[in-house]
Length: 212
Image 1 (cartoon, rainbow, N blue to C red):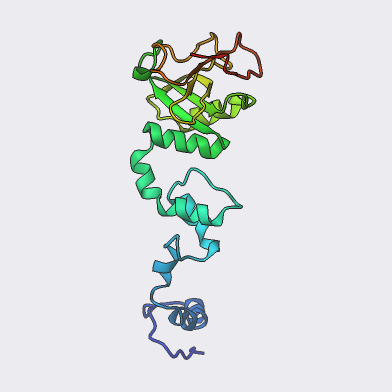
Image 2: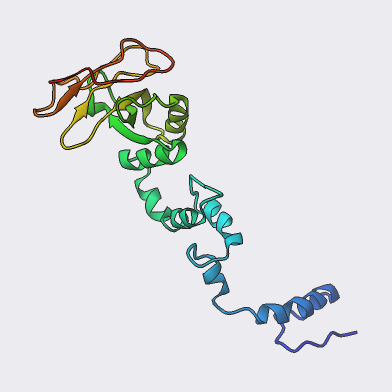
């Protein structure tokens, strides 16, 4: 028995009975959808929450926080722009910071002695006196996020204090050798604090030793 429909069918003349029945059931529901439904479902700032994870996967969003809906929407919305700068130091710093919750400074091979291309260093920036963070997470994130052409040379703890122009030196953490920063001479006066850890240990805390 033919199924009566109240809409214009899109099926060809040789459509099967099952196809016509399926169209008769789903067709009116589809006609009731607003014409902007697809456009809205693909807008990360306007789509229903159920569509957001799919959009993030489709746009290769690298960080997802189930508890931060607003942040997830913002990252999906900015994904096209983000992909244009992936691999740049600032983008790498932001990615590692999202993964670890730390302040990260990426230094390329031409920004520090002892490095050659394609090496770079990932510094975790902390306040003097703070406990050294777990650099395992920093290393894992840096290796996962880095461009294919780059090689992580070292991951270090870098202690910086900032009221006015203040710089505090720091030692490497979990590195084959101890490196005390700054290497190129003390920064200009006034207010320079100098200090370093004495050796590589599992947990290293850097304290200022004296004011220069």
